[in-house]
Image (tube, rainbow, N blue to C red; front, top):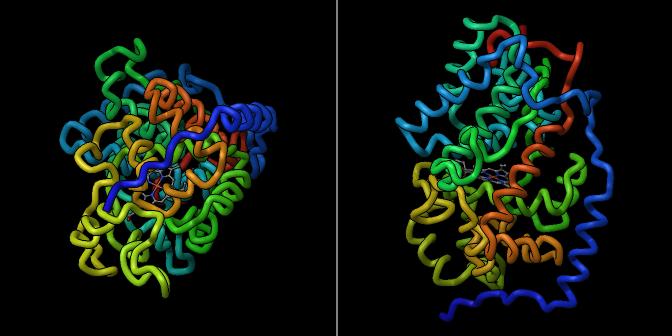
Length: 348
Ligand code: HEM
């Protein structure tokens, strides 16, 4: 079957979407759960001057050993911020009395906790009780994505080897609930309206949604996350008709069963450890892995951005940094709120 590429929208539509973007940008960002402001670039400059250097060293070593480590480090920060805000609740262990976020179904495939623990151990040695676990997640995500970006690695993007400057000064929360993770984390079968609502509830715009979805340039998925798209989709369609048929057939061959939890599928075949704009080309060709990726084509603003980023990687990389900073501000605890956990998996 011929591959159907959605054509870029007409000029009239571009003007409308640009106007909507300006309006969206003018809407004040709401940060829930207290905190909000109070983050700064270089928060640990005096209290722990080597904090960011230490994080970078551990992340770089982990990525050097296994380049696939970049994806779970980026995803951890997202899953932290979307439940109770960026306050490290994703790292807390379950107890007899409480099932924590870590053990919620959408978090079963999270990884790289060992890298965060290794960073925390080094930081506690150097500057005890100073650097929060949630800040470690934010810095490690920035470092992971920077190390995966060719232009950054080759020194063509910035002098400091970073894709963007990360804000710090967050403090750790004391609560973690699996139920909340199920409620607040976006689902791979979400449609565009649901995604927009979920992001808006965190003070994030349509633009943030479109650009942060580009994180799916990195990493892998497992069959259960896409099984519904591949077989018995509806009474009329065996396969999700919004997924390119040839691509779907290839995925079906790899995913023999909906319960197959071991097969790994690269989000961007052949390029899952390189952070670039290739994801948008796939989405435009109806080869986005998830229903939620394809959903970006269902709204004028997000669709316009898919085409913009497909054409301009520079524009994607620049906007990605801005949206990561926006996401990193969601629901933060600052000042005297929360605590600085000594062990990231345990409340003090
Ligand atoms: C827009 C809504 C989103 C949905 C519905 C979604 C859903 C998912 C799902 C289902 C997986 C694969 C899980 C598995 O089968 O193992 C995944 C992987 C991933 N997600 Fe998302 N995601 C979204 C947004 C984001 C954002 C905003 C980021 C980061 C900024 C992100 C980063 C990643 C990464 C890096 C992976 C690969 C992880 C790995 O290889 O270990 N995602 N996502």
